[in-house]
Length: 89
Image 1: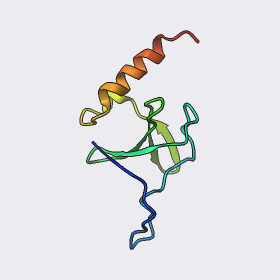
Image 2 (image 1 turned 45 degrees about the vertical axis):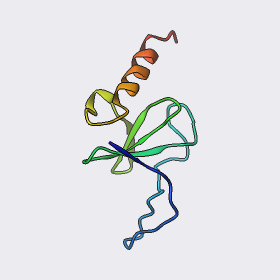
Image 3 (image 1 turned 120 degrees about the vertical axis):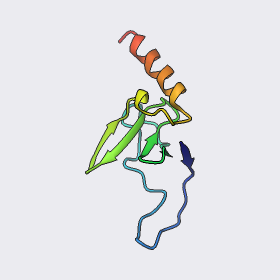
Image 4 (image 1 turned 30 degrees about the horizontal axis):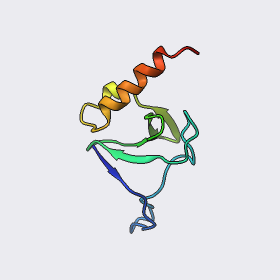
């Protein structure tokens, strides 16, 4: 899986490569979301809480890191998810 940095470029179709689905992470409110691509899907990774999000048909939903076997961040995301699961509410 690769990550991209923001850019102010616009493609011929009018799509901006620095577009992101929301201004903040839905889980923790962090303002940085990184685009990650596994060869099939583009997702948005929050480097603060390591949650990953996918946007489709106007909805944003969290990605289960167990479903990302090709992602360079998978092990870190799984570790964060396990830590959150065992943290008292």
